[in-house]
Image (cartoon, rainbow, N blue to C red; front, side, top):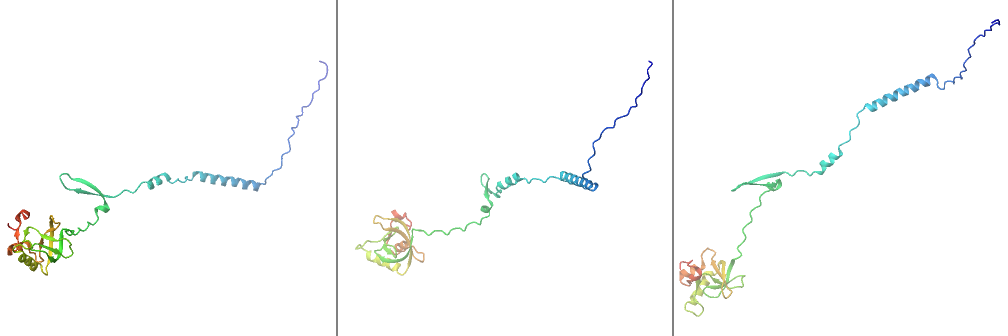
Amino acid sequence: MGGSVKYQTFKPRRRAFAARPRAMFSAGTWAMGLGGIAFGGAVATGWLSAPAPQTPPVVAAVETLAQPAPMETAVLIIEGPASVPAALPVSAAIETPAEPEAPLANERILNGAAARIVDGDTFYLEGVETRLRLWGVNAPEKNAPGAAEATEALTNLLKGRTLACEEMDRDRYARIVARCTLDDGRDIARVLIDIGAAVEMTRYSGGYYGG
């Protein structure tokens, strides 16, 4: 070991660092940027925390409109052996009852004055083309004893009077067989029987005039 030892001094190497780039924004610019970020976060937080608008129940509204309005009804109870409720619309239940119709004139009643006397029990009525034959009585025919007197009696009885004749039948000569009264209510056939100008025909009258 006789040689001398040489010591070398250790010198650390310097690490080469790349040159730092210059700052692109100033301090004021950075402050404005940070403030904008904070404001945006606050707005976003408020927007997210706000309650979402409720969607109107469109289906429910449509269903409500589609359903018809209920009709009001009134219940009328019909009294009888078994009470049966009858449901009627309110408008029908409160409707004013119709006025009763006037009775129709009896089409079998002929009114008017005598137009012409044929014999003691037959005559024409004004406005009626068919001859009328008094119901329930019989007067002498033409040229028979008492025929002229019966015709005269009927003529005097009907002169200037208004008659009401109810059609009872038609005979084989197509004459109207009628029961006639005067305007004072007297039955013409009964008057003729009472004065002896005619007799009752009970097979037709059934004894109506006392037979």
